[in-house]
Image (tube, rainbow, N blue to C red; front, side, top):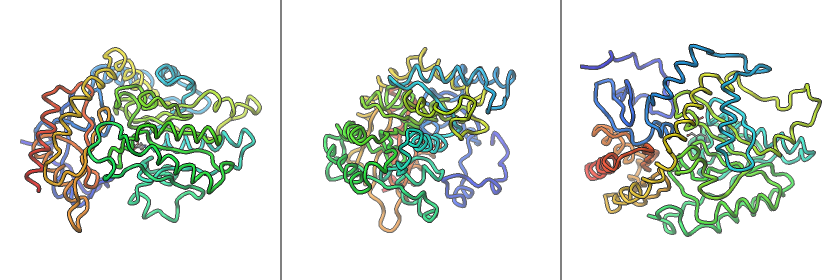
Length: 440
Ligand code: PLP
């Protein structure tokens, strides 16, 4: 007996989904609690992906639900320009408290994509405000994912995301090479020992364009969407050194890695490399209300505070920047992280997660397993002439068996909840063992 009547599936154009295939065999979630979804047929599914990297605290956390309910009944919305709301200020203060040393200002957005485009614009505005306005070039990295807006898509390095929009990508963008190499790092646990030298490719790009033209380098500390590409030991440190040497801003896109996914508040903390700008979203509100945030160092903010005091310093912002209900969700989320010790909790299960994930080595078609914190990737050999088909079938089989993971091409991705029990981690991995054997 379905929990809800089947909706008309046609009008909704789903994001990053093969719409026609989905609508033939839909997977519709009806409700969720803790680490489990219930689908529209009443079946329970273990969420092995924490929403979409979003919900490390589990679904419908009562503290966050209560904060949202209270806020929406008290202040649903107030004008975001020239007027502020108490929750947005309070959340910015909390984010700054949690941030690595030196980060003192926060700009709110509604998504990771908007956070990225905001960060890129801040980088350009910063150099210009300092009289260095020829620094306009933005550097990304191959395989990088920085959302889908024009800025993030341009600095991003995932070919299918760029292909149809090639003519509209931002000019003045270049990319350094990615760090993935199966022959050199397959089945590494945590950070690969090989590959720090790849950071020198950034020096090559700097020489090509001349440092005086380059505004910023943006990288994810761990490439998420491209399939959990973990930075080689020493690699991020070297990027930081090259940025410092040439006066280039370093932006860490921490939309996935901020707020506990790596067992620390930020990837910057985990890797001991402090960028100049950090973008976040997802875990900021545990996915409950859409929200992103861009964190900047004091020197960047101050560089822009130079004109007359009654003049807008940054001509940028969104109607929903600092939305009071989103900010209330963010405040409750950060409180729960603190009170439940969620980042330490995530850290305490990462070894078990690593051990279990690597038990998939030797299963049919598994050619690599990569992990750090509570991020895991299992790469499968693609079928001849059908790239992505095998990964998708494993995803479907796992779903049928009551476990949600993600497939992106032929890479299976894992992002368990911070409080996952050993039983839950075992169930996720066991389900994938079975699926791999069945799919072949
Ligand atoms: N940046 C990174 C590193 C991401 O992983 C994502 C989304 O997964 C984004 C940006 C885009 O975020 P959103 O989908 O909220 O726009």
